Length: 227
Image 1 (cartoon, rainbow, N blue to C red):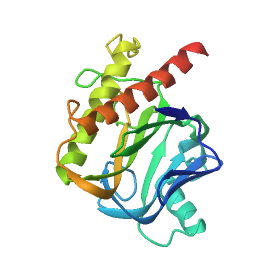
Image 2: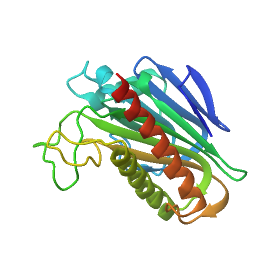
Image 3: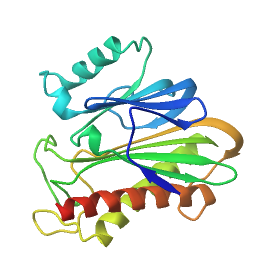
């Protein structure tokens, strides 16, 4: 297992690179990635070769942040549908965690702005536009079925809540925190090798997901406490 800060250009998986420009991170793949998640742009895509994460500090230059993201992609030469995430965290604070076995490699990119946290079913933030998000992108060379991608997202959420609880994170009302107001998760895979049909926390692949997310978010929370 390795944990590193992002560099200007880095190979994450075979044919998949990460580049950073100011408050924007771009994941580019030579071959289409199968994707599932809840991004701001491209939430109905099944395949893409580009994932873009933009800090709201960059997007707030525009009255329409999603359009600002689309404009940036066009200027960057992305001429095809892509997946885009707007995060309230800063891109330079991205935490990268890589887990690898003889069969699979998985890299999680975490962007945690825990200045405002919430508790599912208890906290109310009006129109839902409150600041604060824990945004997660999972990239893997494993071949996940649609069901496995869904269960990987569930495992991600379980690991996120576990990290918040273990690190004593609470809401402003004093509830145990389960997330931030605008959390987003995207799972992307290259679909190589044997098919994986389940990614729950007790499976081999789900264990990698849970471990990466728990370690990455714990590191983010501990860094915030140390400030």
